[in-house]
Structures are given as structure tokens and as C-alpha cells.
Amino acid sequence: MRKVMVGLGAVTLALTGSLVVASPASALTVRALGDYTGASARIRHSQYLSDPVINGLGQPGHRTEHYCRAYGSSVSGNTYWQYHTNRRTRVTGYTSETLLNTRTAWAC
Image (cartoon, rainbow, N blue to C red; front, side, top):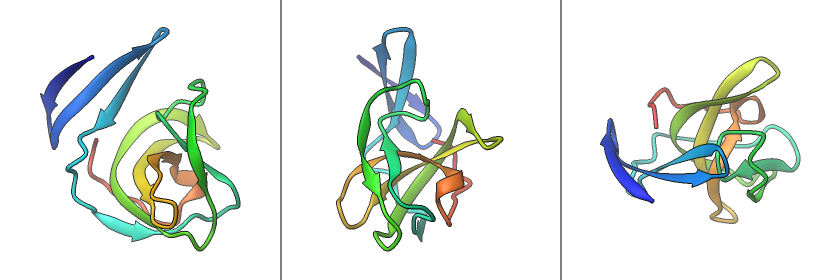
């Protein structure tokens, strides 16, 4: 694993099989608050549907803290994913924008 300086700060790159996963630096600023629009929204380790790691689930009413957005797998034609924290469970990861009511424009 190595760290690379880009845009907002350090990004940690890890190789998982043939998939490169970028995780934003932990010191990112909360850019927006929001919530989940559907039950059991998956909070993923990365922004790719092929990544089997699910960090947790988000439910309407849990509320979210958004840090940044990244390109990833297409969900209903939308390729943007939000890197965020579930405010109830404190689980952090990526969820497709199609399952969130708030979005940030800042790149991860």
C-alpha cells in the first residue's frame, strides 16, 4: 500500500485482485449533510459493484455526512458515488448517488 498526494489530500491505494481502490484521506471536511432515500442502502468499501466488501447499511433517518464524490460503477445510469459516513452507525464508505438525497461536487 502506498500514499499519493492528489487534490484534497492523501489518497491510499490498495490492490484488491485486479481492482485498484482509492480511499480518501480520513481528514476530509464534511461538505454536506443528507440522508438515504431507500432501505438497506449498501455502504461499500469502494465505488465498484464488483467489490464484495460491504462496510454496512444505511436506512432512511440515519442521516449522512458527505465528504466527496467519485466515479464508479453505473447504477441506473448514474456513475457517481458519494464517500460519506452514516451518522447513526458511524460506518464510512461509498454509496451510489441514486440512494442518497444529498450530493457533493468535490472530487475524492
